[in-house]
Amino acid sequence: MKAIDIMSKPAITVTPETPLKRVAQAMIDHGISIVPVVDASGELLGILSEADLLKAQAAPTRGEVLLTPEREEANLGTAGAAMTREVVAARVDTEVADLFPLMVERHLKGVPVVSGGVVTGVVARRDLLRLVVRTDAEIHDEVSEVLDQVGEEPFSIDVVEGVVTINRWLGPASRRRVEALIRVVPGVMGVVFKE
Image (tube, rainbow, N blue to C red; front, side, top):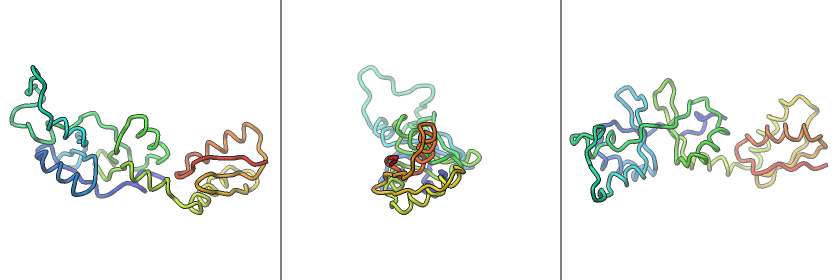
């Protein structure tokens, strides 16, 4: 499963000139926590999160200079002034299994999905959560497909509440390999080997 299969689309985007009040309203209206900032051709320039908007709203502490070379007075209150420029993005063909650890380790609420640099969608935490609640039947079907590719005799499996039980004896090396294959299936909460 790829990022393109689960991303929210079309992505709600803004330009660097968009006033922050409009960005905040878009977040509220669409129930989103991040907004990609794009140029006129849709290429990703940065990202605005709820935290970025709250920082822009917060009063400066004593002695803090409001204007820096990157934040000219004319741009204050715009998406371009408040956005985070170092953005983690995913390609449309990024494996969903790679998005889980990426978002957890980096504490990301969402990841823009790009094709040729152009934003095509966003994978948010809720998109990943939808995969966690997949039915046992859906998980069973996908795990069966994965195991069919292993090239050994057929596996008998059961799936209950996302926990996959392998009803076949396997040696330690085979167990590690099979578990690694199964663990990338979205919605798998655990793997048990029954002998």
